[in-house]
Length: 251
Image 1 (tube, rainbow, N blue to C red):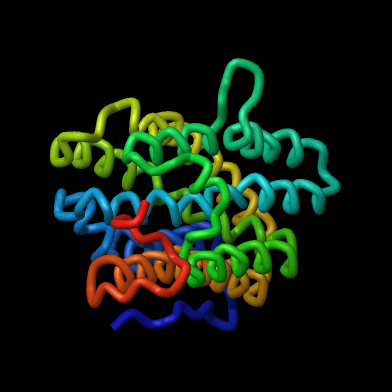
Image 2: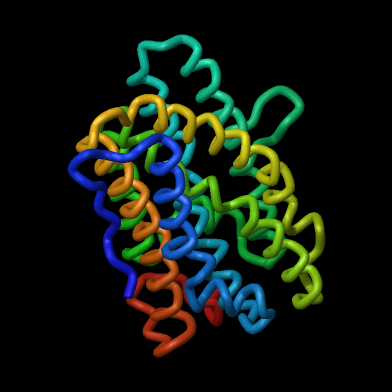
């Protein structure tokens, strides 16, 4: 049974805190979700992958907004210089179309209309609620908690290194161009995670603050997990697609 990690009253060292955070990822990161396992195994239909791409766009879309909130709350120019790289990574910059544009190409590679994806109108309500919960977590919490919530990036590089070759091998209609979004993330995510982890280890100096950091990462993992819960329920088993949500057979 996975229990909610609790920081002892005396607190822990920075190194012990990192171990706790990494253990959370080992247990709670969404690579362990049945939907994700089906995707890597090549057992999702094209329609199910289309639903995944359309819904996940809602999350990709708010990432630079989330990072802009974090950026605006820091009084440290060095922090802001580092954090603003995240916004450019997703929105794009000179010579780089950015992650959001690459995600739309992923959807198009799966034969989903880009304008439909961009509208987010046919995303699952649970997806939209989960995404808003992440924005709320970042907007309504301390800067330390907001930064800690991004630490799922500690685990995304390893997930991508498995996902990309698995999908290329097992889905004949998926190409390297389709999955181009993930290639820059192989170096962007570890870079960002290293900075965020160092910040958290430096600033979480009391047991109470350390507990807030732990709770933030757990909540972020829960948000990512529930998004896949919704996809699984609607498009895998039992297959209850709610009214107004994306229906592959009608698009």
